[in-house]
Structure formats: structure tokens, C-alpha cells
Length: 154
Image 1 (cartoon, rainbow, N blue to C red):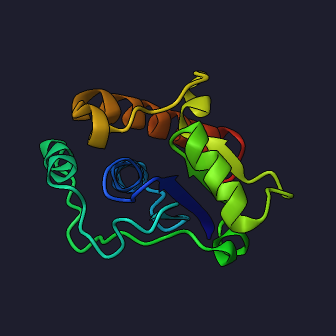
Image 2: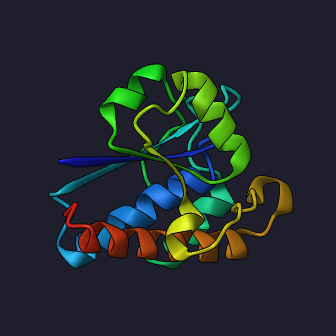
């Protein structure tokens, strides 16, 4: 099974939205048994906290349930466990590199790179703009699914 880890700062907004969006897309495409998806934080600030209520509401608007998800921190061991580790912004990428001691196998990607965009997904915790964050996350996840199929990963 191919394993993907989505990463953001606190694991209560962007990365869980990406995790559950991707799970939903995989299920609808019939690939849920071929790809495992999880999410994590680079910080310890929100450990054990549930998905932030506005992020839960945004997922629910799209018929996606994230019940039971709580924030966890990325570990160095995750680098060996996952095939692809996807950050939401460049700060996440720097912290992922610090946590895992590098990216010798080229597993790190920004989510928007799959959508052909060179940019960060703005953190709605600070901006309050969950609509834009969702739009970027969904576009990135849809493009990631196309990439996985085209590259015959799934």
C-alpha cells in the first residue's frame, strides 16, 4: 500500500483537511484500498486537539467526516514509514527537513506543486479564510490523485 502523509504547522486545519479530502477522493475513485493517508504537525502546540471547528465545518460542507482525528506531531520515523510527505507551505518543508534530518529519498513535496502552482496554502488559523484554504487543498488533492494514477503509483 502506498502511504501519504500531509503536514502543516498544528495538524488541526490544513493537513487534516487535506487528509480527509484525499481519502474522500480516493474512495470515490475506488482507490481507498491502495493508498493510505494520514496527517501530522511540525509543532507540538496542538497535540491531541481535534480538528479546528471551522475546518470541521468546511469538511462537513463537502460531506466529509473527520470524527476522531486528533493532532499528532511528525516524527523522524515517519520518513521511513511514508512514501510521500506533503507540506502545505515552505515553513512546513523546512521543519519537516529538520524533524527527519533531511530528504535523501526525495519524498517531500508542496501540495500545490501537483496543481502546477508554485505557492503555499495560506494558513486559515491566521487568515480565517477557510474557503480559500479549502479551494487550494482540494485543487492540490485532485491534482495529486491524477499524478498518482498517471505515474502508475495506483
